[in-house]
Image 1: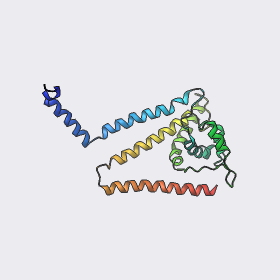
Image 2: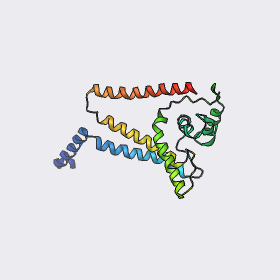
Image 3: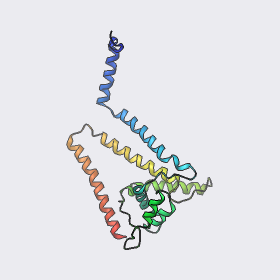
Image 4: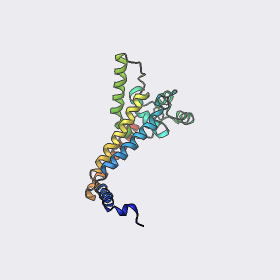
Length: 208
């Protein structure tokens, strides 16, 4: 007894042809997978922003310390992270108390060991969110706190990170069939940017 797909070789050829086409050009399928997974990630991370009380999409020790750099640059005395720690709910209470009780730096500020690369990349989206908030308040459509923490700010920050991830994946996939030397140069440029960001963070930390 023959299997059904062996009785119809044209269907088998169609399946094989589709498989070959995917192997030669997987980008459409991979793009769809990336879009679906990104949408799912965005939804699961931000679904608590409209609950009462609000559940922050930015959460955890490291994520909070990165975010404190961004928020404090616009809303606090220069990089005094106490205010962000006290005014937001991005850390569990135990972790927040541990951070607030950290040994201050020589200038009296709380230490933040995390670099500023994420901050620099998030500034345009923070400013867009701030502009949206100001526009809504000025138009009379509503009164939204200009606190750098509410849903609009977090939506825009997460959208920005997903956009950067998509642009990087698109750039990398465009050279997937290139020579190893081109792939190596592309990766080295990325590491060079990361390294320069680290040096910038060290310079900033030494100045405050």
